[in-house]
Image 1 (tube, one colour):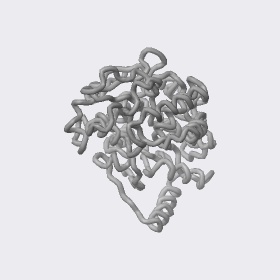
Image 2 (image 1 turned 135 degrees about the horizontal axis):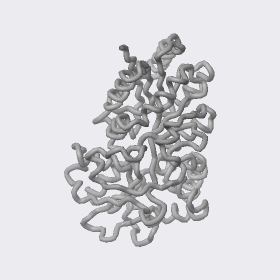
Image 3 (image 1 turned 90 degrees about the vertical axis):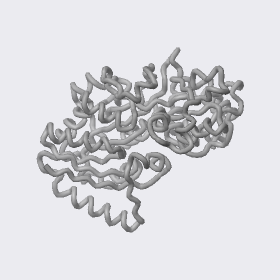
Image 4 (image 1 turned 180 degrees about the vertical axis):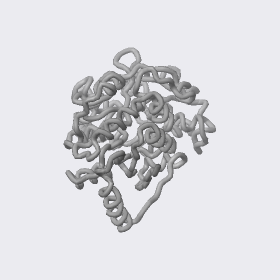
Length: 365
């Protein structure tokens, strides 16, 4: 059975941090345009054929190959996919409109997938399987999209110098941590989503006060990606860092220069375990409104919620499964269990504009 795989990855900072586990191909602008035209032509012809699902994916992990191959073997449905940056795919789907060959849009970060839903790109999915397996907070209220893995925004600290690490996101603004905290830029989607959750829980005024306190506690101006914040603890530049959990696990299980050799000094906290739970972000997908192979697209989403697919989906990037009861990968299990924030993740998209404005107002770089 033929599996058409075309990868177009435009390198951005996050992608650079993934280069040990992902392959990337960079193209000059004219080559990108030519390839985009060729891809449209290659997908348009078979789009209406039976036994096909056309996937636009912003995930780029080696284990996804096995994920798609298993779906093909189980269903007889061929997965044709295009991989690119989420923003690139989002704009492409909008430009293609009703003529788009895409059936499913798969991306990372609830803010990005909520933006696609707000743009009217997704169709509601009526699936007993998805309703039963995906918790309510990990899917759109109208079933426009579903989350398939969880990414926890964690607090890390220097075991040697921090006796009482922050136990909540709110604690990051406590003056006792003045000059200790490292976090990436406020324009980063992970931090925008975290701020969006703070707005949802506390309102804009308190969220702004929190941003001001966090800014006052910075050890340095925000720079780099999540891995760089963790490296800052090892180098002694930071005593506390905020990062997604899997960046730490990459350093713990692999060889990340500037991190792995000193990773033993880094401790971790699942924030807000005494109240609302830790902020999570996701990888998620939805069926596109113009999908020419809608039934196959729904089958694909249901497959992603199966136990086997959940393991592939999560283990590819040290993520937590979205479906309750699915066993954790051995490396992820080293972090322990946690209580997740039950806030419906659609709120992250709803509050994203306010999050940007508040960060700008306080001068958070």
